[in-house]
Length: 251
Image 1 (spheres, rainbow, N blue to C red):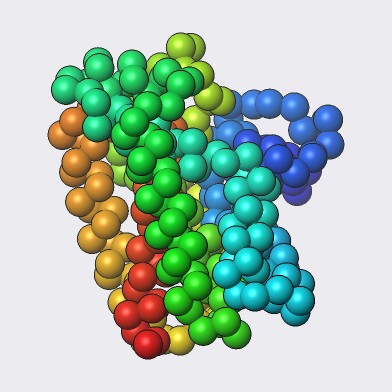
Image 2 (cartoon, one colour; image 1 turned 180 degrees about the horizontal axis):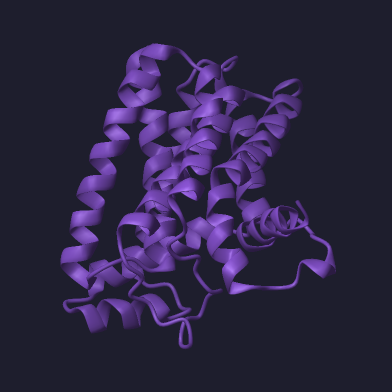
């Protein structure tokens, strides 16, 4: 039990800015096992965003409430996934070979592709959430944050890590765990789907599978596997796809 608590705190420490006990320390083994709690972290982050939305919506217009909710989730994760998405756009937008793409993604500076990609992603998430029934936004936020984090877990399990941790500008990346860890992550990812309409779930799951398959094929062809930035980009795309699928099935 103590080991599992440390693994969970490792996930909390790595994927958010929520303080954890100093005794948690760092272990590469715990980080690899921590991926099973990635969707649970999504539930925590999404719940924070949902709470802020509900508080803001009681006194502010819809768009401001959505904006504050997005800001909350970004601050809580330290823009962890947004940073990965921006680097992904810079690397795959400006690189022509595996070496170039990996080198660009390691650069701490944001380029044109990254700036435009990040702006478009944030705007897309903002307008997508704003298009959802205001009463359903809180549960959609929680479900989207949880489920979107399942796709990187599957990518880690099915692909290979091609980054170089020793030269990376970011933290170490959790790598392949056990099938049991993937199952645990899956359970955490699908639990919040019970909060939304089943029609939306019937579209979200196959679209997410297709997104994962096509995304994996693309990055494998370009660089041979995944990096931390690739995982961040996948989470962002999966979250946006979740919102769009929900809109399509509920409008």
